[in-house]
Image 1 (tube, one colour):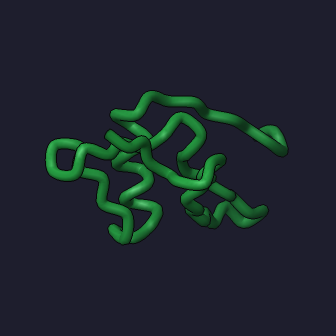
Image 2 (cartoon, rainbow, N blue to C red; image 1 turned 180 degrees about the horizontal axis):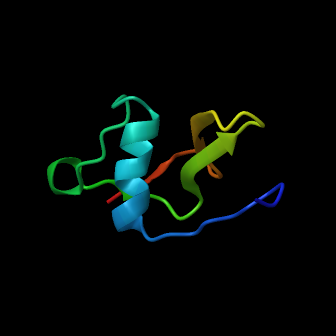
Length: 68
């Protein structure tokens, strides 16, 4: 595995990954509150030398979601 890898996906995959990575503290239900994850938000998966994974929810803007 290379030292740094990048995976890009669409909101249908990033949204459940953000919910999982935040231990369900983030709950994005578009049909309930009309918010959806923005284009600069997602999940960083950090894998150490022993293969242990750490998940971090990230955002590139002030808010992690798009408003109405």
